[in-house]
Length: 100
Image 1 (cartoon, rainbow, N blue to C red):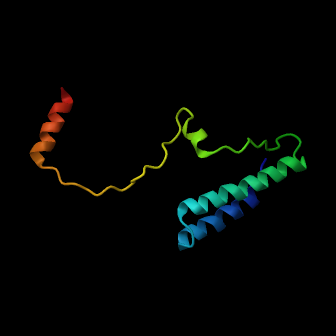
Image 2 (cartoon, rainbow, N blue to C red; image 1 turned 120 degrees about the vertical axis):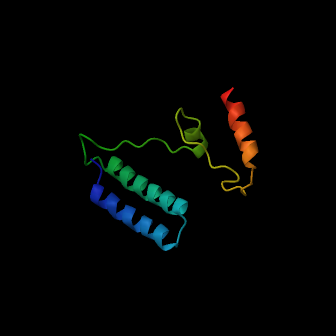
Image 3 (cartoon, one colour; image 1 turned 90 degrees about the vertical axis):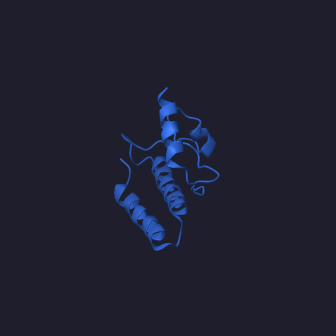
């Protein structure tokens, strides 16, 4: 079993950094993942948990994970494009065309 009390401490400290605005949510979660991986790797190396010890996978770049089946999509270049107004009649026509 992983060291959940120690992992929980990390969670709270990193989430606090994001909540206070000291770090972006992505920076906070990246830091959390890095610190949790370090603890898990240390547990794996120490061999103190003979039955259910953690076994770390090799580190991979993000693209590897994006290429896996069912993976989330990578961030878009423009996550929040400027909105545009479409006339109501055009919307009705596009909905009708989509039903065909």
